Structures are given as structure tokens and as C-alpha cells.
Image (tube, rainbow, N blue to C red):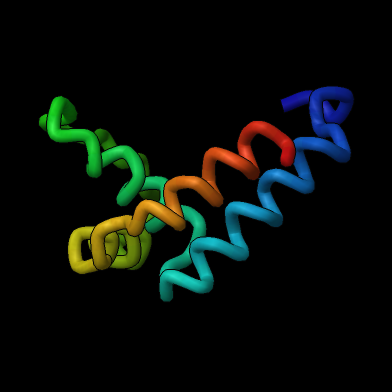
Length: 82
């Protein structure tokens, strides 16, 4: 990724999403996987890992509580820049 594509807005969004993830008891990567898997049309997710620990950490998303309506709204608000 070129440095010029990293903007203040994108950084704010990452921080906002990370805050939501931490409040859910997840790291950001786990929350992203949980978010993708919440859609019942998704039947598989490909993970790229370089260490076994990364796979173990990512799989913790399967034990996460479902998203509340409030969490989904917060995520949408962050992504829209509100």
C-alpha cells in the first residue's frame, strides 16, 4: 500500500472500528471475520496466516457473541464517517 493512500479519514475509521472490537472483547481482525460470517450467504472465508498462532487467534471469532443492532449501527456510522 502506498503511503499516499493512507488518509486521516481512514485512520479515524480504523480507530473507531478497533474501539468497537475491543468493547466486544475481540481484536479488530476477529471482529472483521465475525462481521463477514454474520451474513448467512457466506459459506466460507479464506484466511491468510504465516504462523499457527494467527490461525488460532482468528478462529476465536467463531466464539464471539452475535452483533447487536446497536453494534451494527455503530459500525455503519464509523464506515460512513459519522
